[in-house]
Image (tube, rainbow, N blue to C red; front, side):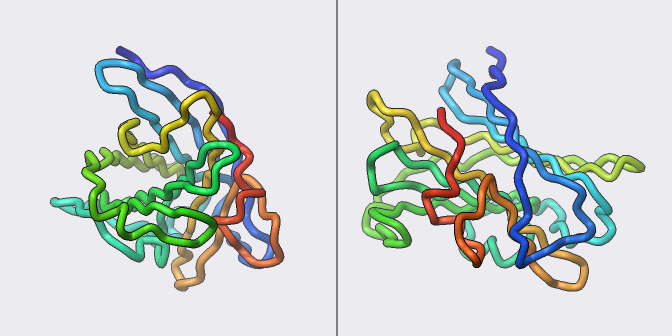
Length: 191
């Protein structure tokens, strides 16, 4: 079965962390109902790829902490009206991370130890001379919060590392003077 495009969302760079090498980033959200329900995310970066540090794919992707310290793409998923949420990080290397939070920035490490998650499949591509980098991540629904009868609220974000090591923070909305992807006011996508 083919995934259905649900929506496309442009990200904006936080004004405190400019990145001249990137012209724009957008995220497409797709839903695949069968054979296994999953959320598909496609992040597209347009700009001077030579001015960015984009990790090369690894032969054996692994669950890895600290991916946000370099170029990485993220999604925060919560259920409207609930304090708990999940965070997923996808690196161009194929490495990934998944976290549970019981409230804003309150990590629920005990719940993470019992998570049996299917690793997300991460696929990347580059096109030249158009200077477009794409990362697709397949996130099985089993790893998402139980939505019951309430919609999901999503924060779509990216951390982009320039060739000089500076980090730029991209999100749907930046509600604070400093970049803060955990701030629910920045999660403006709904499914």
